[in-house]
Length: 372
Image (cartoon, rainbow, N blue to C red):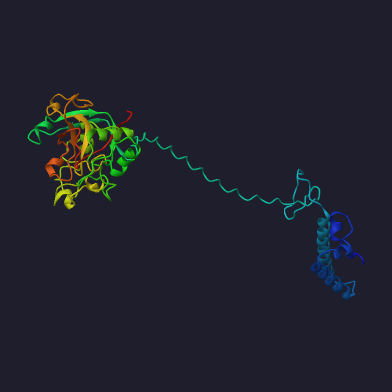
């Protein structure tokens, strides 16, 4: 195909570089739309047949064809050029993506996605304060009575003479059975060959059907002591028993100062044994528990303690850990029983009995010394 030019027109490329205008071969490498446009321009020009066509018209036609050819050539060349090295400094033109210095295709770098802001670390929680040392728990089946003072006895004008004077006593910490010793527990000592069997009879629970969880009764002081020793315990002192029963505020009964009734104790209220004419299973009156959680400290059965009895002992008792007189003929029992009226169930009430006595109203509860 001949070059498109005339006497008074210089091709577009020759105006700036002196090179020949692009050939039809270059135009053929252009996209189909560009080839179609170039073909229509050439066909139109050929059809005129008049080389004297107005110069302005011929100039416009040639310029259009030249622009299409140049664009096609540029696209063809660009497609064959590899990207420049990463370290090359480009001089990119304002309207294209080719380096003005070397002609290389400049691959635009994708802008990195903005980094998501890192979440601010949550401040570390303040360390929890070290817990206070927990109070030592009681042994299974026992309640712990902490060390300290309590009021022992009754004030003037109240109670019996042997309950006075009321005085302050300080005791070391100790444990005491939550419940009175049951027939079933005492049987373990008998079966072991350490304890002798209690008496039997109408009001005795030993060998009575259905009374395995009733308090063992009809035992003497020596039997009570032997059982506690077999269980790894001991009899409580009279002072320990009273503190476990009434706490430190001088109350009359284990539950407070409200009058005794069968709501809180197994006693003579509507009949002995609350109308049953016998003891009840231990722990049957939880409303009557002591401040430390010991049950049946009032009613059900009296309980042997370690002390000898002395009616005037309170006037000469030591103020710390008293253990009772050094000798005597009678032992102290505490707590009242299932056949007695309210006045006998007061926590300060004292009763004496022969150490050899075995009656249906007396049983036992054990204690244990604990480390300070």
